[in-house]
Image (tube, rainbow, N blue to C red; front, side, top):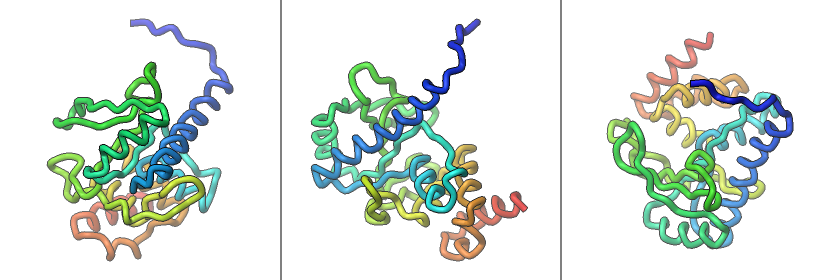
Length: 200
């Protein structure tokens, strides 16, 4: 199959980054206004933490992931609908089960959505640990950010290729090191130690 490609455009690249940032801030504003507890997690959380140390090391991400307690989903749906988002429950491909997302308008695709990660639950049945709770977070400029230690635990639990990349980004700017290892559950200690040693 031959795919017709548009010429490379800096404007398109800038728009892609700005659209993700706008979607994150729009979702956060909706949840903040409705007093729905949440925390930004995933790639945007990694970017937020890395930017505190070295803005030049920030990796762009298309994902907007929010940590949300399941009992607060109805309130979140109402708040996000008010902001123009559309709630969908999709098949979670390759994982079984379903994925709750908020599409950014009627023409949006699932990749252009806000993805829900349920707090205190395993994302996949074979995950070593459940997700963090929304209480493991701190207020930043415009949104609630998952704590660094909770983020590391979640990344080590998922441990997909992109999670290992994110963990290396955090390690490269000095946000995680061997000192953190002792505060992690044992199976995650082994994963973090192996990852840090592979960087040496």
